[in-house]
Image (cartoon, rainbow, N blue to C red; front, side):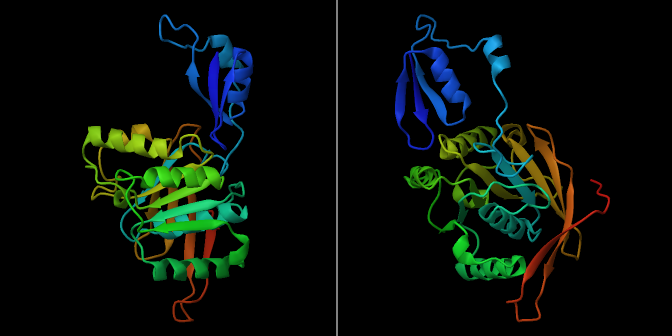
Length: 287
């Protein structure tokens, strides 16, 4: 007998037939929460035959880059364009438009931003929409701005339920450092933090994007264990004194995507209200 839980509704079903339960789990809409098989050992292994029959998930939020239930971290130096590129990604997913040539699944998006002000976010948002020639009313994007920390109180549970209720496809946290009180250099505390992030999207169909800062060595800041925990790691490399950038996929459990080169073009002729345009280039990219 196996109990499985719906990631969309939270409903728990009890299956007498193990084969039926596994078939439902393989759809990606259910997870196993309890099994009474082999109670004498406490182990519930999957056979090699069952493993070989398991098909890879086909659902992407961004093709080749982000899957539901996975955690990605993008990092750069301060002022390295990571936040504005993340906002562009938000608009692409919310509208179903490609993200630098990568297909997206049109989905509701949530942003947790404990770093930027509401006026700044509003200005960036309007300028990006102007550059993409999109209307605000047609996009499902909600923001939690300076609302709380995920390792304190019930904020994590509130957000998780919101993701489930609204079938959110992408959650962006800007920046990761602003939503917790853990020590970034402690391996143990980073493991605790990763569990918090994992719990946040557990049982949802949401991909999580964390924005993070680089250190003085041009690597991500904090414990080296963090890279091992993440599903995807991307370095945002800005060319000095320009708005040109490179997105370098340093880790991807499903295989790294090729580097992406581009430029963020700011039209400031209208007193910082002009459009912001994102372009992709074909220049050769090196580390």
